Image 1: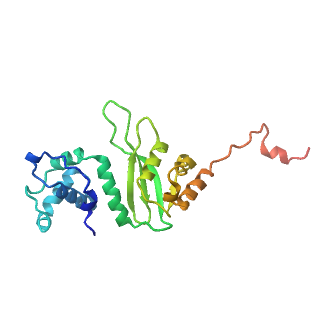
Image 2: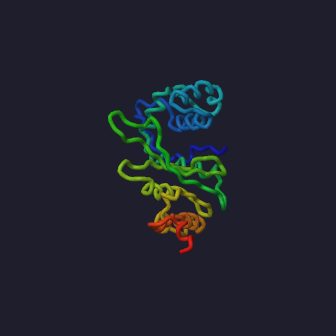
Image 3: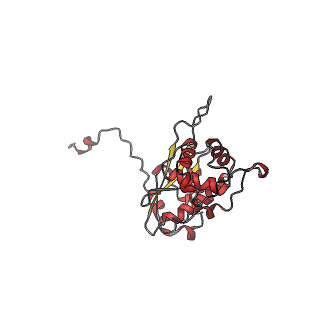
Length: 219
């Protein structure tokens, strides 16, 4: 696998220079490798680093050893999220290898356990899922005072989906989602797929005061 660190070259190191103990690129690489191996928390990432330290030392400097779970937490919390997402999307876009006709599903989910104490708000995300690769290509958080319809265009702008088939739930399908967004760059198949979804809205059924069977009875 190609080294993913070059895709994060724009990231600014949030660590204070005079007190810097770890190399940002190494912190990122350990975290990526840990998550790909099933890590789900900062503790898991730190434990993975300690377990794989002999192997990691074969290509990393690790001047202060493996960062602690608190260090991983602080570093990622201080990174610019937009810079991190651009780098991640570019890297995932390379390894996903989307081809013509690939299906990318756009869907939204509420994240359990994200409600802040004393509030009713819960974090809601929209994601782009590449079915053929089994990968989430990108995500966008839905602002509390908006809905998925406003977040989906931002998600589409972050991806190169020319030639792919994009599916969206009927309730979120809007023709304006794709038509104003640089149509030549997005590709006609994506517009066609979304356009078809927009035409699937259920037409209201005519109201009648008599049961339908009554029309079939002789006068």
